[in-house]
Image (spheres, rainbow, N blue to C red):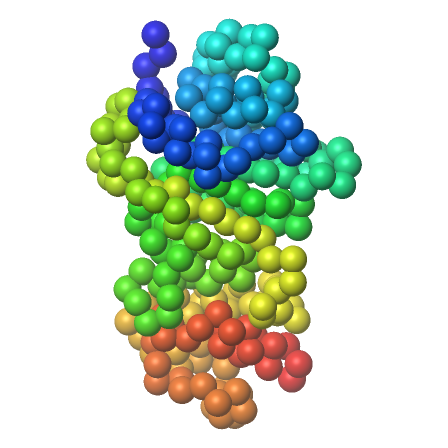
Length: 259
């Protein structure tokens, strides 16, 4: 009997109806290259492996791996990578032109940095289906001018189309988390709706803008953007960071880069 470890943020999915609903949303087929992050005790691993015949999984807890292999024995080709997903090089899984499909019940204590890490590989990814804390999914999908809208919203939406699929209550897990969860679908853009001329500059600009949410953009970005630039891009510097859209931030960044 494996006891969930707090340091790995383990909450094992146990509700069979929810598991089936997630599998139905993913729609796995044998011709796809699917990678599961944090398979845990195999609640999602087993039904997906049965449909695909082959599955890569990334698991940090070495004590779970024998259990996982036993449960999946003779169900298909399970390829286990004992590694920390935060440090894992996902490009090493690309063996042909087949893009990756990522799935998983992500540990809530590392979900935001892990999403940022995965965005680095967006060009190799077809889509992602993740279980996350509902609050995080709300932030990912948030629109400008709403309380949940912030740096995470902008950076995820820069790379992906975000769809919140459905919510999952604590009772679906063992042990139950203290928060509600949501399933999110992320589909990387093949053509960017808003393309930054210098992505590093754009990312730094967004980070600086949200460093002090209560301040106006003029104050937050005073060392980066001068009055002439604000006037040239036709944006009101008296607004706060959450009032600008993704397109506004890209336009502002591109204006600064081209100066």
